Length: 289
Image 1 (cartoon, rainbow, N blue to C red):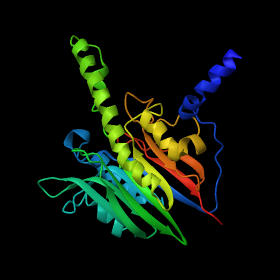
Image 2 (cartoon, rainbow, N blue to C red; image 1 turned 90 degrees about the horizontal axis):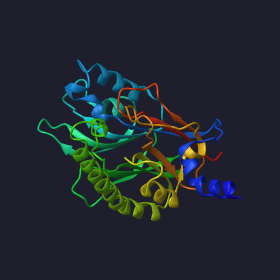
Image 3 (cartoon, rainbow, N blue to C red; image 1 turned 90 degrees about the vertical axis):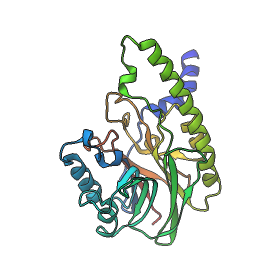
Image 4 (cartoon, rainbow, N blue to C red; image 1 turned 45 degrees about the vertical axis):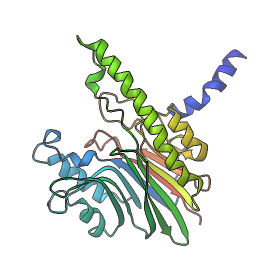
């Protein structure tokens, strides 16, 4: 009985770690892409001659998802390379809602964005009530006779670099700072989620939450979201579904959650798309016939 009891206790963590879910094709579905684009690698140290920026923007423009949610989005309408809202929106025929969190000295926008092949009938900003560059937005999208609420979130980062985890002569001080960052990150994400929960409780529509949680599947934030919604990877993914593209490759911090009145039929982690420090994730949701 002891092994059985232990497995029963561990099941929520096992299902959050590894998915055995069978994936199926749906003739009629809604595809949703979520991607932390790391400001399309606009900074010089991230790429040479903006080569990776051009390739990433080309990839997101050519992806055929019905809905595209971006975190760490960047748009500069004066730049031939980075006028991403025009390239993703008008040029591709997508409706869009772009919410800048920061506008820099040249007028370029940093923030969140939602693009949709279907009309956006309502939209808004979810006030996280914190002085932070992290944010959340929503768009109500009308698909035929149905309406979906898509919430795009980017929660508080731990601000931990991979170098913070390396041993060196200052390791003791580094680890002290590391645990301080972890504690502050947990507390901030908890407060941010409280404001997002209001939109989950009051949503009149089928709801999909996309984004970068900056937290693991074993966290308090993850399990609080699962009180309201199902996790797409757990329901329709396979394997481990790691989404971080870096030394800490074993992290799954990008997610999609969905309400009970929807069904996820397929979950994909686009590991072949290596432009950002996150992999895109794409989920197919079954629509009623």
